Structures are given as structure tokens and as C-alpha cells.
Length: 261
Image (cartoon, rainbow, N blue to C red; front, side):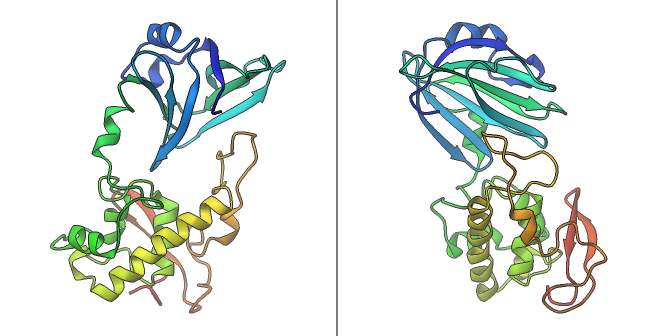
């Protein structure tokens, strides 16, 4: 998307807007060029040129998809919530489409920087500036389960339910363990596996269990590597025990009681 220019806004879902109005999109987006596309955790940030230093911040929610379709195919599809026409320097046009069945996704248009909610996030869990010492300081004294800690985006941004479960399996840590009980060796193991699992997820283009696809509509393949998520009642690939499932911080949590301690 870098270098493409917004030409027109063809559809808007007001319920999914934050920090802006439908009029703001129609008035501020056309004519602006995408200078850079960055990311923090689960948020995509497109920096735009022109007065005001505007940013378009996007979050897929649970069922969102952002697709880039070549010009000539501008008809809205089922569950299309936002439609933007983008133009290449040679005049070719593409349609950027934000689909979302459940409308849990969010779109922010803000001046002077990305959406304000990003400032409450911790460092990026995959590429951010943090280490085992940072984790140790954040974990110290906390009685919350380590799974809840991983899901709290103010600690590290970008770890979702699937990646939390998989990370804890690889680190051989029970999701029920209280944060304050982890020793330094376990914390180092956890830090290593957080980056490793997220890196593997990116390499495999994401985890497609239902809705996730990339800009061209292609599914990811990380689901083929899952060790515990979605495998309740099955045999653990490491120790042979039976995978179980509990509820932690309101989220279904799968783990192996035999080898995750």
C-alpha cells in the first residue's frame, strides 16, 4: 500500500469508527498518499501525507479482513464495511476493502499520530524493545495467572489467545501459574518462546481457523503447527498426557497438565 493515493471513500460502517466521523473520512482521506505502513501489536497504522500528519489505524477484531483488490473489481462483497479506492502512480486503481462479519474491527483516523489507544499498549511482543528482565519486573508480585498476563496488552502488545496457549506449551509452563511464582530460568524460557511463536506465526502468514486471510485473501498455515489450542481431549505431542481446557481471564485455555508445570 505504500505510495498509493486515496481517491475516494465508497462505503463506511459508522459503528466501527473511533476517534473520527464518517464526514472526516470523506473530507480528509481523498488525495492523501500512504507514506508508510507500520504495526504495533494487533494494530495496523498507515501514515498519510499532507497537512495534519493523519494516521489511519486499523484493528481486525475477531473476524475482520483487509483485502486489496485490483481495479475493475470494485463491487462490494458480503460483509464489506469499508471500501476505499486507491490509485497507483501510473493511474491504476485498487479497492481496499475492510470486511467484518461481527463488526468487532475498528478504524481510527487521527491527526498528529496514531489512535490514542495505542499509547496504553506495552512494547510489541515480537519486535519490540523488551527482554527477560523486563518480563521479570512486570511479573514480580503479581498473583494473576501467567496466561492472563500474556493477554494483557499493556504488558506486551500482540499476543492473542492462540499464541498465548502455544507459547506456554513450548515454554513448559502452566497457564494457571501465578506470575509471582515464576523463577528466572522460567521467565527466560517464556521470553524466548514469545518471540519464537510469534515469529513462526508471521513466517507462516498467520493462523487461519475461521476468518483470517492476508491482503490477497490467502489463508495462513500456523494452524498446522498447533500443539494445544483446539486439541482438548487429544494426546500431548510431547508427553502423551491428555490436553485439557479451562477458562482463564474469560478465555478458553488449552494446556497439557502432564508437562506444563
